[in-house]
Image (cartoon, one colour):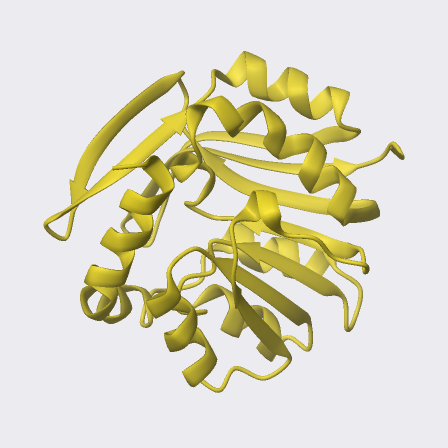
Length: 204
């Protein structure tokens, strides 16, 4: 099965279990910090938004405007039914997404690692093109180059990532300056291999 189709079908199947975990998850300090950096009524793009909870809902409650995209039709249906104000949600592949407006921040929390390995190098220039100058990009990532499938809630998912060195070089070439780079982030009994906050400081 094609990589993106595998993930779409698997997320569509696990929506009840996923929602039961994510809808009540705590918002971590890095999300709170990002929110405080964005101007009032600023615009956020959430890549792989899932059900919209807890992240899109948190941003919206802070009077920010959220656009959420996800490949899973069931995730977007759930997000749209959650009644999250200041938000809009679309079924869309990130690489097919376009917007006339620029965003003040882009977040990709646990989503970039689902992108096909051969498209990983294209992420950062596209994100940069969607951001206003001075906008922020917060994302999670693996620490080492990898490509594999794994199980979650009894379903198979595809994962991939580039090396840290490659990612940092791609970001530099896309107009980003790194604000922090945290390995082995852990909070609220939740861990991430690598979390990066970058700021677009050069126009492209």
